[in-house]
Image (cartoon, rainbow, N blue to C red):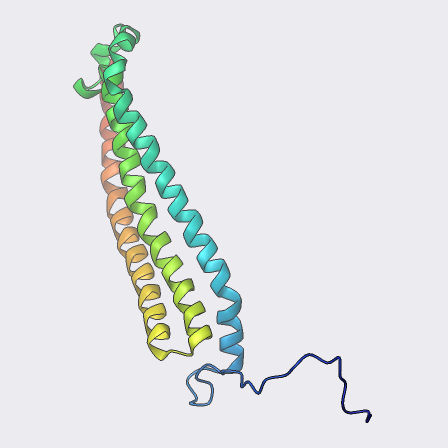
Length: 178
């Protein structure tokens, strides 16, 4: 028996490692390595964001379902109801505001989480299958993620002056009452 033949050796197949588009000059080995390392984290962050959105939705539903039960707690607002806007003169009104907050939180958190998860999943599929189409879909989801975040930032920046004016009006109203 020669030194090169081992009867206890595992069988070996002639398999070729699929290299993702590096031969065509699209991605370097370092880029593929970094994408491979980012993919699990992107999927994890996406899944956790979707779970967070589901918890916001659950809280909003529970808040809405508890609204009819709040009639017994309206006595707490009898003394201060003259200073509150009409909508806040009952406990139910405050719960509706909370439920609207939770519904808004679902919208704000679900879509970025979904785009993040899809970005990571498409990168994983690209690395597994060497499919240029999967890479294109990955970057398309990345574009959607940042477009959504940009629109959300524009809305937030536009809301800051509105809230600032409302704050000034509330301060003036409180000073006028006192």
